Length: 191
Ligand SMILES: Nc1nc2c(ncn2[C@@H]2O[C@H](COP(=O)(O)OP(=O)(O)OP(=O)(O)O)[C@@H](O)[C@H]2O)c(=O)[nH]1
Image 1 (cartoon, rainbow, N blue to C red):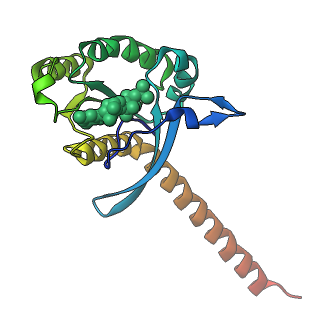
Image 2: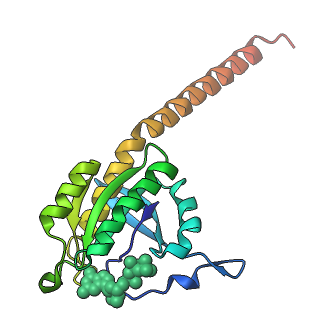
Image 3: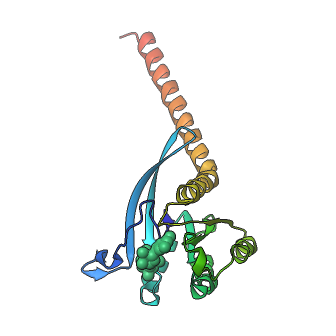
């Protein structure tokens, strides 16, 4: 589950179309399948609206997120400043295990740039995140950012998967022992 604000193929989307009981939620959903080292990973993406009026709802989504992509617009100083508030909300509401990366979008708009690459990368360092500059318009670095986010989430949850597989092994071993016992009992049965 990732917060995101762009797609590989750039399209203007209206998040007001996402409703719950007829009420706009400010959240857009997408499913994508990625291939990582031969493993197919199905990713559920929640694209949350940036507007203040949706924040009560969008904060609810942080609780269930495994990965969050913080996106600002490199041509907008205010979108960059907004990250501080956003990161604070995520710290408060998202699970401790949540993986985060920072993305400066609109890298194709170099002439209108207001936030330098260095500022982006310093902020990412401060928050302990990896940093990407992308363009939803040209698709530059989009799949790299998503692939990295997915790798980080998988790595963070590797232990859970291993534990789950371990319990499954234990269960199967127990079940086959029970079956063997049952078989032996039948063999020795005098009736
Ligand atoms: N040149 C350029 N324009 C972009 C890019 N990404 C988005 N835009 C434009 O920026 C505007 C805002 O895009 P949205 O996708 O609605 O941005 P958003 O952050 O999801 O907006 P909210 O719904 O308010 O959160 C639109 O006019 C897009 O066409 C990009 O990479 N390059």
